[in-house]
Image 1 (cartoon, rainbow, N blue to C red):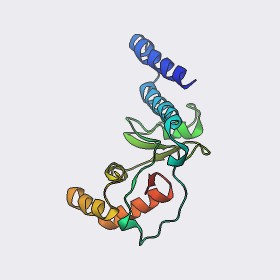
Image 2: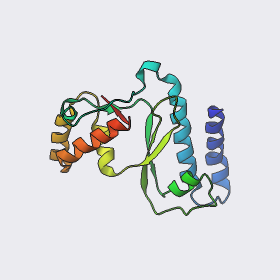
Image 3: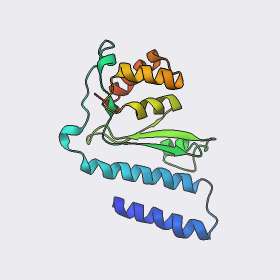
Length: 169
């Protein structure tokens, strides 16, 4: 079924949108839907033992951890804020907001539905830096030097993202 969704989105983009006037924001909607379909397809390739498990992380542990992104997630940049439509599941309810907006799509486990979270540029920078090789302390120093992101903010973000299982360590 997911392959059919991708095929249909391709048809809409290559045939319908090139030949007809389309509703506003259709391209952003298709981009979001395709990202979600690809995310759901990616769950099939994740071994059972690779899914993040809930665990409590203390403040004292955070600096020494080597955080990395959980196995099934995607960052989606949209030119408009579709969140009101996404949350209501009805394009007739809610207003599309001004953009751009960056969303994090995440599947925490096979037992849970996907999650959608609006993220800031700071969160995005921290996520991209979490490669599993560097400690949070090293990441905090590097991000302070590169972008002026205070180390305390990096520690707070990493701990929060670990609690949400968006990061694993």
